[in-house]
Structures are given as structure tokens and as C-alpha cells.
Length: 275
Image (cartoon, rainbow, N blue to C red; front, top):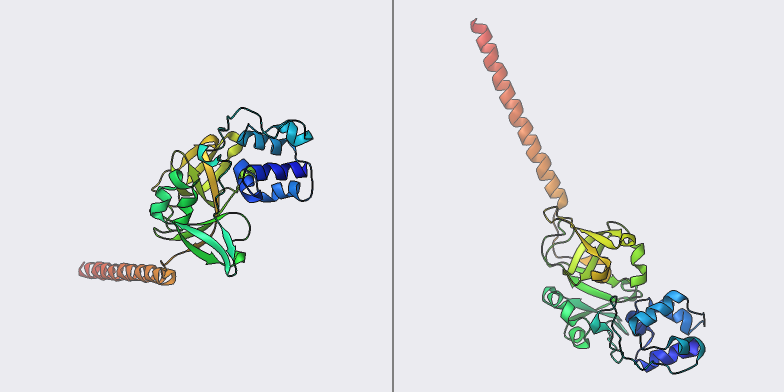
């Protein structure tokens, strides 16, 4: 079956990484079947059919019949329409001799992410940085620029977040209150802390700035989830100075209270002396 899976990937015009993204699994899972020869389980085969129902599962399992069935319905609820283009390979991260090239999605590009993220041109037009491999090891990575004040005082408008895309099959393992980027049909690209309730069919999204109310997203509306791994900021507040200023203000207030108390006590003493 290993050989047939490799033939299928080639026929779709993909490589292992793009095929894995296409069906919604990690590339390590696919490599387990294409290099070690392990037999895929029913969950993996189901993901293939959900991604492209033209694929003849009998051929994949036994070699009998044709690779593709004659019907051409390819879209599913889980897979956004623009991601199921079998001849399209999107290169997001590339290695060079200096490290790994990471696209930078600024505020303007983030606003257009839903309409462009399945197009190679979208990524080609972005600025890029090169990072050492240890900073972007494995998976698909992006830089995302923060917009707005919803995550203050953790992140500020204009900060940059280095994010790793989480394969869909790993979403159930998301840890509560970790910071993630959630891409959804309803709200676009959002940076939030998540409460994982996917076993019940939704996630809860919370801002660090309590002025922004939490909200929920149902599973079927979520397109992508990215884990925030690093951040870059030019805002460097002197937190010690802020603390010292608060202590100094408190001491001044105490001194004012002490002075006022002494004045009142003196006046009270003078009144008692006159009696």
C-alpha cells in the first residue's frame, strides 16, 4: 500500500507535506505510511475520502480498479473549498543555507488572509524573514502582526508573533488558556487564549484585556489554529520603574495622612487645653 499512497500523492501533484495539509494530518503521520510501510488506520483513510471523494479507496487498499472514481465531487464541510485544488502546491516555509524562511503576515495581509491563504501569490507577496532552525522546527510557521488592544498587557498593537500551525487531528490536545491564533469564517484571524471544549463541539476564546468579551466558535467554523511560540516587540516598559512610582505615590499618600493626623491631634489638644 505504501507504493500506491506515493502514486496517489504524485498523481495529485503534491508532496508528502502538502498532501498531509490537504487531508488535515501532520506530515509525520503520512511519512509513517510512505516510508515505514505501516498500514493506515480507518481514521486516516476517512480523512483522505473527506478531502477528495474521487479517490477510489478500494484501489488504495487492494490495487484493484482505477485510482480515481469517475464522479468529481471534492468538497467537504471540514475542508475549505479553496484548499482542495489537487494540482496546487503551496510553498509557505522553505529552507536555505542560512535557516528557514518564514512569511510575515502584517495587519493588512491578515485582513485579507481568508481570501488569499490558499493562493501561492498571497505568500509570494509577503515580506519574509530567515530564522535559525531551532526557532521554527517542524510544521508550518508564520509571523503574524498583532492588531488592536484585545491582548494587552501581554501583546500590544504592532507586536509580531511567531506561530506554528497545528494539524486538525491535534486540536483536541489544545491546552486551556495557552495563546493561539484562531482562523475562522466568522471572525477571520484572531489572537486569543483558548478554553478547549472541542469534545463538545466548540472552543471558548478569551482576551487578556477584560474590556473585550469572550466568545465561542463552533468546530465547523474553524479553519486553522496556530500555536504562538515566540513574540517580538518594540514596546519595552520599565516595569520596575512603574512599581517604584506606585510605591512612591503610596508613601506620599501615607505621609499626607500622617501630616493630617498630626494636625488634627494638635488641634484637638489645643481645644482640650482651653477647656
